Image (tube, rainbow, N blue to C red; front, top):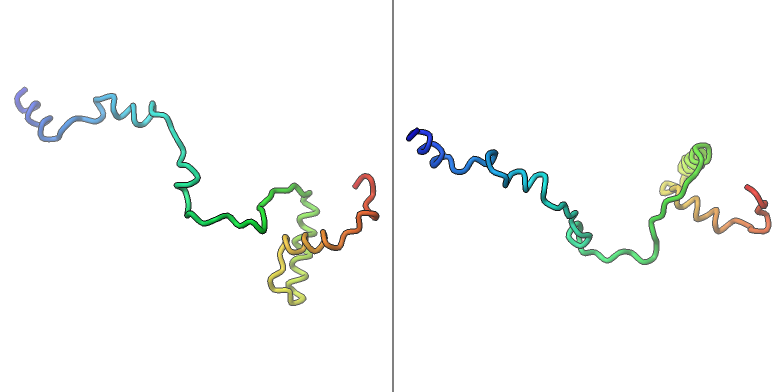
Length: 100
C-alpha cells in the first residue's frame, strides 16, 4: 500500500480517474474561433464578391470547353469568371425568351 501511495505521488494525479478529462473533452461548451482570430487582418476587397451559382452539368462542361478553347487560342488567363463577365456584357435582354 505504501508503494502505491509513493507511485501515485511520483506520477501526479491520474487524469483518467478524475472528471476533469471528461469535462474538457465532452462537457465543455465548444466555441469556434471568431472570424477575427482565424485569419489575417487584411481588408476584404470591395471591387468584387464571391458568389455561388447553380449550373447544369452540361452547361458546366460547355463553359469548361469554351475556356479551354480560349486558352488554345492564346487567351492564357481565360477563366470561367472572365467568360461569364463577357457574356453579361454581350447579352441583349430583348432576345431573352420568357422561359429558358
